[in-house]
Length: 112
Length: 113
Image 1 (tube, chains in turn cyan, brown):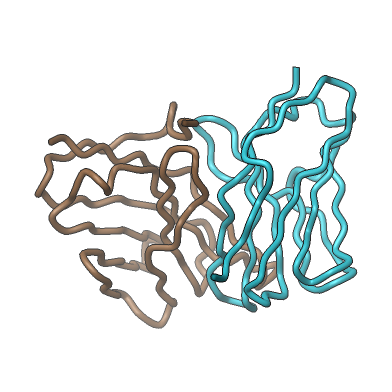
Image 2 (tube, helix red, strand yellow; image 1 turned 45 degrees about the horizontal axis):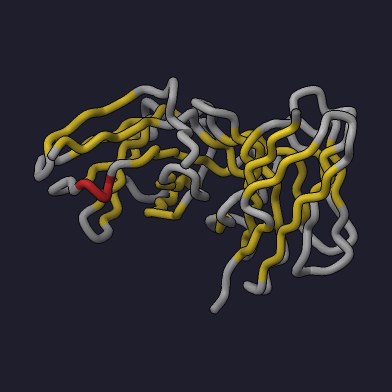
């Protein structure tokens, strides 16, 4: 059963703590993405990776970091430098250039 | 569940009617467009796509129309059902990278029983 998994579905953290969100895909896709979504808003690109061991900043990369050590995995760390980390985070993957992106179920992060 | 459409434009239609959701895209040279459906608290789901060498593409109960002259994309849903209630996003392939999609702000579709 192929797809993208994100865990956990809900995550709670105290302000000042770093937190890592998991994203795994078994679709054999080269490219992976992280988006942030706030209520009433569209999707904003945080980071993306076209191949293993390479990634690029998106539109709102400040306060976030990523790694791409394996093709299947693209974890996102929300650091304490991110001023408003509470949001819905979506991971996606894409088979190749010019194709649709497949999305995971999302992780809702709440920082208090 | 999480509501992602608190402040989005809303289209309200009667069950059984046809729905038309519109989107203006930004780059006249974009050559690939997608419509996504996002239900509350879930990730977006692919509905249908279209490339710039076409002006119409049909799927099951859905049709996408592309008007390159005015940079306009529309999604038509036939015989709208309660399960169609969701937020709909259009996306275009970014010009600076064929790996990046640029998403529109979304439209919330409400289906009245």
